[in-house]
Length: 147
Image 1 (tube, rainbow, N blue to C red):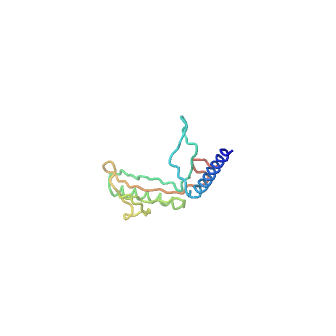
Image 2: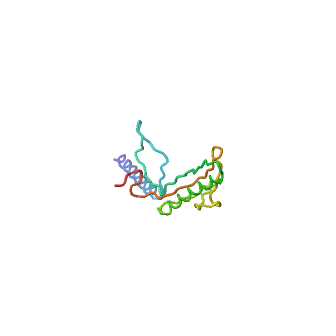
Image 3: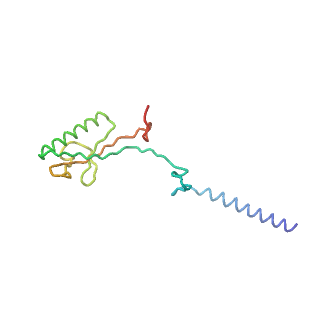
């Protein structure tokens, strides 16, 4: 009998410690960070994932011209940029920027101060790089077709 009472006391003591330890442990957790994925053999996707749609679509475009005369190349590239800028302004949801040689992004204004023309890959070519930015719609995102 004494042995059963001693065993019961030990059991209650262990249960009490377990309850106190688990209740205080759970109160201090503010953030859970998952750093890996565990998959079963042959599985291609983890059991849990989070899908976050991007806010903007960014596209870098190289504008190149290979007209023989340097001034004509410059004029044709500027004409192309003016047409693209006019179309973006009509649309209203597209932003165009110039990317300079230091990868600095500058709002596109078709003038010699913002458009940096550089030599192209071949002789008698000029090029510049622009960035096209547009907001991704929340409906129909992730490649889904709109109906």
